[in-house]
Length: 98
Image (cartoon, rainbow, N blue to C red; front, side, top):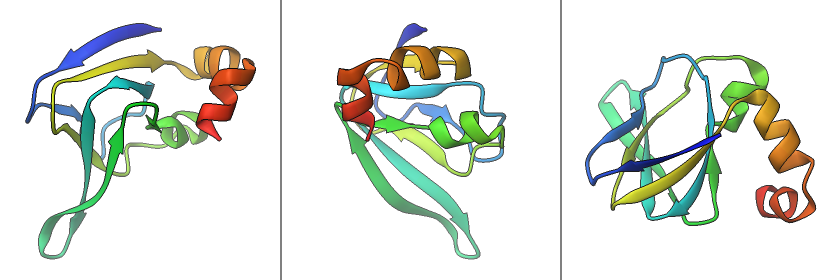
């Protein structure tokens, strides 16, 4: 687990990259884009208290979308073991995740 900060416009993960970490948004907003036949399309926004990227880690699949910082974003990262132990294994974090 570590903390990362991204500036607006910075790419956090890119579609097709390996899924090494899940992310918890400590502050800020991110935008999620997916490739379509007409280019990239905005499909979601995530905010403080949200998780993203966990399914790729759990299922050991590549990233299904590109995530970009919309504002200054502070993230906490979790590898699979850390996600299972610190998120699924802790009631408050598990409730936030679910």
